[in-house]
Length: 419
Picture 1: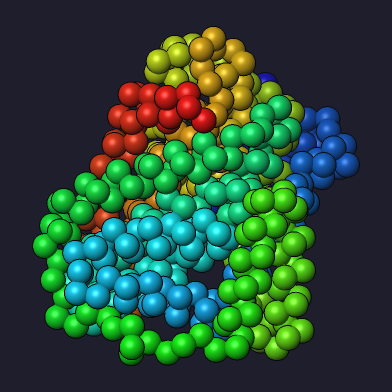
Picture 2 (picture 1 turned 90 degrees about the vertical axis):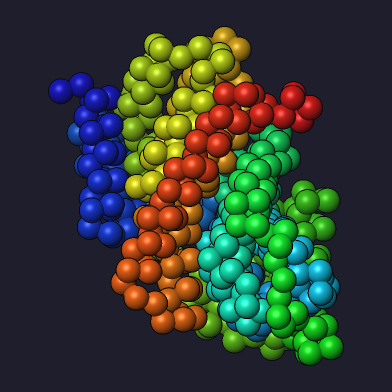
């Protein structure tokens, strides 16, 4: 059998195993990469070269730093103080939850950590204020997804590390704004559908009831601010600088490091680098070129973005955006951009990333699962209610993917060529 075809079959099998067995496919991907590479005539060193050590260090450093900020209560208290600013203007809470989650996600924690923190916070806040908890949690999760493509967050770091070997760079702001715009558009749709403009809370959160930041939390916020300024303003290495800042926080006794270490999403990191290793082998064996040739055979410069968006959204329903979709689809986008005249790589990866996260509110993915688990943890629910929530989340995910495919077809992810 042709090795290019075989490599794609192996990828499909690995993803299917993870979906059916509900296991982390990162380890399976590494094993599959080794067997496939050896069968394809690659040496062990050539296979291992696909492991992105720089990406791994960056992700561990950033998640460790913000794990510290989460463990000592800095992020939670910061969120409460921001929400208290709206006072009795509770109709602003839905939009505030979106932008607050997007901001926290953008400065480093990313969509998973922020999603867990802010969705849980939004759920309990909604019950306390007697407003729609399901909708409030959705606004928070959409915000966490929308802000995660910043240069400081895992998704933005991953996009940079995936693209530079392909010969592309300098698109960080474009990707971030595209993903942010995508999330905001669907948030506005839900704001209207759930009548967020009519939200009236019985118990608005008061600034006077919220405690002040303690010494550890003030130092933590200062450290995060320094990291943001130095890494964005002075282009310092994000992962290494995050490690340095985290070390200072630990030495100053601002947090228990063991709790923060436990909070690092090791499973997600293994998933990302494991699948990245497998995709590198597949690329070497011609699998990615085979897919791109197939797609370009029936697409043109006008249909490239919506087709890539739809493909990414569907794949995201059964796999991880950062772990599977981006490592798989970015090389394909590069092949298409080089083969198809008029297709723009940055626009394609913007459509891929935004639509993948649009699908991520599905109950089959982490985002939807977080919303359901937060709801059931905050209030006892029946199996019928949970099933109804499952259906609603999946239908909203389908609708969100549809909106993003339409945006791609209209050229929205090109941002008018302004960036």
